[in-house]
Length: 589
Image (cartoon, rainbow, N blue to C red; front, side, top):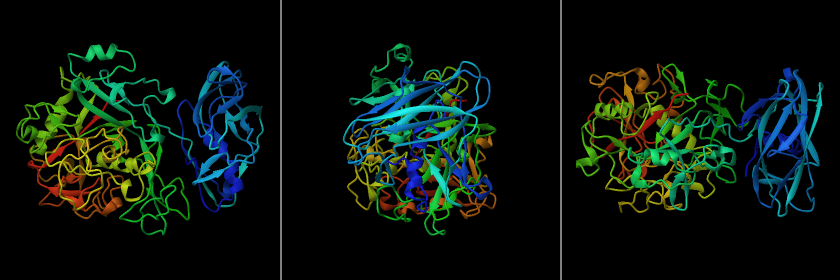
């Protein structure tokens, strides 16, 4: 378990001295931050956070002990209350009873590091009389015996800075600062238990619904109108019958990203934790992700040199989280390729707007539909009286290229399949759907390859071989993004072919050049999975142009080694026998 990423020049003594920082979570949600030490700051780190505490409670009980079993990770809720109405500073620290004869502590860059006898971090706080905050503290015990960590709080107006060596950069992961998924009125949060989707507890204090650090992305469903009220009033844990489900969605929380280079020239990501392979185009590394609040919109370079470290200009917040003039806390993405309300129709639906979209596994995807009709059926999903129970505040639409890229980047991070330790080396790539019947959720059990034994080899719910085709490597991810059917994307070259699609500009991405290095008004299109990730996993690509102005992504079942989540091609606006589409939902903030 990786808790801290440090520049390799920082000595172990400094690594140990900041372990507690990974435990302290700075509000009622996890936080994630980078601090840069510079000469102007006298090589000091100071952190501003919540309220002053004189009263320390753990999980609601007054105590100062955190007890963690062997090889166990636990999350504690620590309440800190402030009886003052003035700014003050406090120091939250811990002391472990660790047996120095055993390997105990936290995994840092795949090494077990023992915590010091006691350590802490000084925090500046302000609050009003009687105010309190609850923080989440995550503790991992890598030893073979139960460990007790003693918490303590000291208060004062003065504090000592934590100092590091000159010009070093410190990159800290506090956990997940994931924006709470925005559920519309009739969306039901679900989790997977004993081979069934069941109603989840949306009070996520016990990580019941989602945990992105464990590649467990938030899932939600809508059900048929005849069963809706029954499920809405049902207790947590109630099985949601797949026959009653009409749409399935996965939450992509707002984040910023940066892509690393080990040589300052080729940006293939950070070396994957605990693996020896250096990132290459054929086997790219980790995209650094930090989850951010809705008011954070970073527009930096989206890249950094490993040897130089990150800085505040290294981050970029993907364009997909800006929808017109609205900043989104996240987006819901269809868990599977879209199917229709009549999957037995020719091409699973064909070129019509008389059918309704359905999103679920083990059905034929809706194909041979033109871009204009696919867009029209997607936006009518939230019309008054719609079958899904969506409110008027919901926006449903056909997926844009920037939105596809946002899923791809998250999958290529520690929070996606890349971070799933059930897979290694080439198997970090999303497995291909080789179903020649275009069955949603199928998996070949391997990444894209030259094999032609087409079919649905594993369904989406088969552990490893089946779930390996999702963006998380488990059942909580998004499927059909490698193979299956091509997916038409709302991404266009200079408005060509849009004559019959009269829509607001927020519903599509427009590219001004057939050169990926200048496609966004003469500049690189950051966060669009174009030039930044071209040929990753050897996925082929062809940019849009005046003759073929629309992007299609992912490849189809017969694309062999070309298919993949970073694969894209160009096409005209008419439907294809092997072309489908995907849906995105914005529930509003």
